[in-house]
Length: 307
Image 1 (spheres, helix red, strand yellow):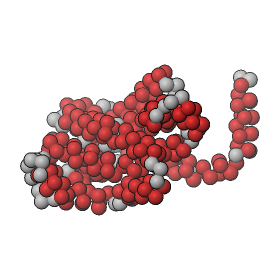
Image 2: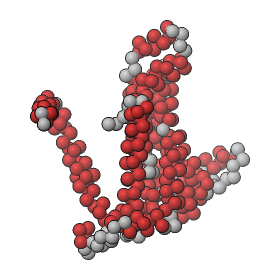
Image 3: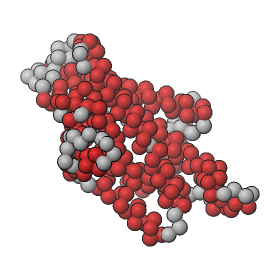
Image 4: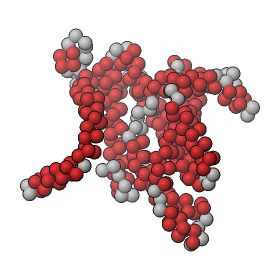
């Protein structure tokens, strides 16, 4: 009971000291309340047979009917498997790549070369996703640039986005091209905070450039890497549906159809809102559980965590 007044006093002092920071945070807080927390009331349609006439509150309650229907349906395993595999491949390829890219840029001594590479690598992030997907389709069709280049190495020249076995490779490689430069920014910022005297001390001890990276640079930016990994795992089941939606077609549903695109088809195309909401709730719960588990493991292993 005594701690409560002390906590309130501490909060009041902090607000008084940093009032302008709190004022600047108000629009962000209002945004999340309006567009993230208030809409959570609509989650209940996952447990109802929703119809427009009765509205959310007037629709009949059906419990876990839609969840059971999803798991007993013919597409549950397919979309879960595809989501897991695409997300796993993306993490394995695209998560360490920006770290390596940032380390290489950090070792570059020529400032003009470094800035040019950074600018070129950032560009795909600012190109519209619709344009990106249009380029991918053009490059991977049977007469496209990528297909033509691969033909020199004996790969059959055919439209890659019509082949279920090639879709994941196209998705992951194009995602790497899109994100490697932009995602490296935070690691470059972390690298700029490494104490230069640590490198001098390592050099005096006889450590070469590779040893300095291994024993000085990586340990210094490890907390940043861990935090970014935890946040990435929190999106493990949320594969970008917009990109897949723009790339896939019925001939590659077997490997391209993920939970988010399945929800889109069921909810928007077929107007089965309750069923799609149930699948979305399941997806969100898995993401939340993964964040909690990985954060707990990280806190025990490295003493770095989100909370």
